[in-house]
Structure formats: structure tokens, C-alpha cells
Amino acid sequence: MNTPEQTYNRLFGISCTHSFYTDQNDPHLSLAPTLSTKELMNNRDLLFHTFGPRAGIFYKGQPEDETVWLTFRVIEEDDNFINRTEVPKDLNFFDQQFYFSPASGQTTLSKGVEAGASDLRAAQPKAFIYTLPSGNTAEELTLNYHGKTIQTLSVLDGKVSVDLRSWPEGGYELNQGDKVVFSFLALNWVQPGMIGLIDIPCNLAGKEIEYKLPFAARKTYWQYLVVAKNLSPQAELNITDFTGETHFEFNGNVTLPDSSSARQFTSLQTLALQQRSQQDFQLEITSSENGLFADRQSLNLPPAGTARLKAPPNGSTEAYYSEIYVYV
Image (cartoon, rainbow, N blue to C red):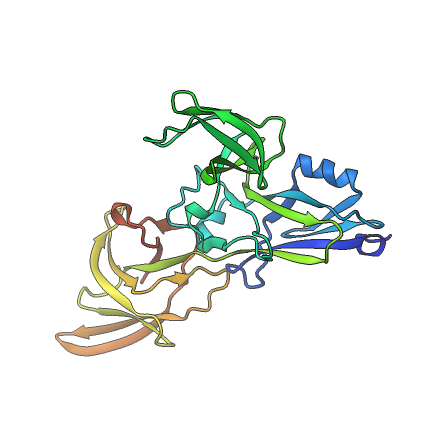
């Protein structure tokens, strides 16, 4: 059976990577064109072929020299995505979808996970009321889609009514003159697992190009909670790194939810969560009797996982903590 590569010519490709995984491939991530993009591709004899987090767009025959916008949903089927992924600290993930759109001439879809909320777009239904910021006395705003004005909206009592139900999903802007007042992502609906849209301007007669969407593994402070039920209270504990690159600080004894006591150690720097961590930490245990050295042993410590994340105290914008329980 012929493959798309044998019967069609490749127009461009999209690849999503994630540094949490050893091979950079997130097995739970997939791409899918929006309904309006499917219709556009059918009308121009384009083919979408997906390989999990990678996709190719192919054409047949000789395409016309025109630029069209193609929009694809980024779908993640694992609920732990947000736990293992570094996200902007000023972004509320549950109120705002990721939105990536490549600037002209760029082959990377965005500044990736290092972007702040101001670089992303708020997710909105296609019909909503927008309230101007306090003190803004504009009488009208223009609604722009991919750099073109599509509507002029009147402001009544500091509000404008936006209705895009006859327009495709994608990125839009409300402008006051040349100034962008509000940029947003218009969605028909947010399907389960959807984490955003990729909005790509495509010249059908242009050269083949590769777009990349990189996700980075979340970095956390690793916090070991050592429950020493079988050790003398006088035993000295210390966490060491074979490479000498990571250092831990003893924070004292803490009481766990089950009322047991644990000794808490926290890394002084953040460490990336990994599917197969290369970190090599040891718990050094030194026991003594009557003030005299008795025994010394070393235990390999497990790496941090994605299940136990603890927010920083008092709403701080610092990194999260990964709790790792150790029983000795």
C-alpha cells in the first residue's frame, strides 16, 4: 500500500518534544486539525498524516501560490502532564489554554515553556463580553484575525460584545488604534485533554519547513522525608551526591499526617524531573553508642516522581517541591 510520502509531496511538519522523556517523545501527546482546517485542507487537496506527537502535511500536484492559516489542536491524554511540565509561573493553567503561533520567519512555534502569560493567549468561547480596563474611554475597538481587521465593534458602558461563531478557531486581537488591548484564542469547545492550539501560516507553494514545539521537564526542589523508625535518635543522617553537584540542607524534624516524625532534607537547587532519572543520591547513616562511633552505612535514594508535588509557601512564585518518602 502506498504511503503519503509516495503519493504526496511533503509541505511541512510539526513535532512536539518533551525533555521529561529519555527519547524526547511524549507517548500521550497527539495532534489533530480543527474542523475549519480539515475543510480547508480538503478543498486544497492537502493530507494530514500523524505519528503521535509528530505530524506531516502533504500536497498532491502543483499547489497555488497562496498563504493559508492551518490550526491544530494539541491533545494530552495523561492527567500528569501538568505535573511533569515546566509552565510559566504567572500562568493559571486552568483559566488559560496554551496558545502557540509562530512569528514570521521563525521555525520554533513559541518561546516554549519559558514564555510568560503575556506571551500566551487567553482561551475564550466564540461569543463573550469583553470589559475594557478601568480608565479606558475608547468608543470603538477593531477585531483582528491574522493581522487583518474583520470587524469594528462599538463600546457601550465600557464593554464590547464579541461574536465569532461564524469564524474559525484561532488567535484574535482586540485593537484600539494600533495598540493591542486584548489578545485571545477563540475555541468552539475545549475537549478533554486539550492543552492548546498551534496556529501556522502556510505558503502552499513555499519550501518544506519543520515547526517544533518543545516542552521542558518541570524543575522542582527535591525534598526527602526520612522516617527513621529503626534507627537510634542519635544516628546522624546526611544526603550526598556522588557527583558533588547537588547539595541538600537539613530542615529539622517534621510531623507527618499520620503523626509520625520525619527528618526533612531539601535540595538547595532545583532539579528536573525525568522519566529515568540519572541522579545518584545516597543517604549516609552514622550510628554511635555512648558517644563512640559504631556503624556507617549508605543507602541509594529513589528519584523524585510526578505524583507528590507541593506548592511553595505563601503563594510564592518559586518552584514547586517534590516530596520523596524514605523509610529506614
